Amino acid sequence: MNRQSRKQQRRTKLWFALVCVIAIAAFLLIRYENSIAQAPEEAANPQASTGVTASPSQTPQNTDEPAAATEAPSDEPAETDKPAATAKPKPTDDEDGMAVIAEPDSVTALVNKQNKLPENYEPADLVYPDVLFTFNEKIDKRKMRKEAATALEEMFDGAKSDGIHLAGVSAYRSHATQKSLFERYVKKDGLEKAKTYSAFPGTSEHETGLAIDVSGSDGKCAASDCFGGTPEAVWLADHADEYGFIIRYPDGKEDITGYKYEPWHLRYVGKDISSEIAEQGITLEEYFNAVPVNN
Ligand SMILES: [Zn+2]
Image (cartoon, rainbow, N blue to C red):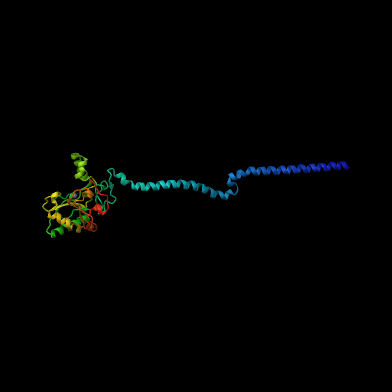
């Protein structure tokens, strides 16, 4: 080999080395560019790499969030709907501006022109009290609820031992009877006038089976103003509370009870309440701190 051919050989090697360096550089550059191009893909698709462990926690998170978001709104309306639904019956049932009594079976139920019994309420334990009535038939108006009937028998016995002879005039009255009675009065006198002397259906205490109109055994002045001041009326005013009864519509309390004085109308409330009401000289409305009932 001559000197020139050696030079030639060296030059070729250099070129080869240079091409190799360029090729390697190009290869690295392409790889680098590829890795940059892949990076967004990996980020977009977390499941591809470490996303495999992250994805389970990520997917539940994603499903939890919408789930929680949909559960919360669906729960909340449900909860607010429920109280609204249970609270509604009172205002909706009372198209006449009256509240519907929640516990009509309670012996302390406050029935008046603002609080009415549920539609078609019927006491479950009506019996015939074993006392004298001003009529002989075994009909509805002779009935009272058991507890009130027993108390009535004791009261009539107590009166008898004081020389006072009482008789029942009218006790229970069904909702249907009160309704047809009231409708008859409305036809005759119009709604406004009928309301002044007859109870709106559902608002008569006689529908509870806890109230009774009482007179002397001769039946004179039965459920009439002239009963006031008779020995029977005086005895009832003095002693009814000892048996769990109250004079429901006392004299001078019309603005509170909504009814004029009815010395014959007795209402059973139980001895605890009757004695407290008698002691304080108040009405059932005042006992319950209820709003005064205006006609
Ligand atoms: Zn009455």
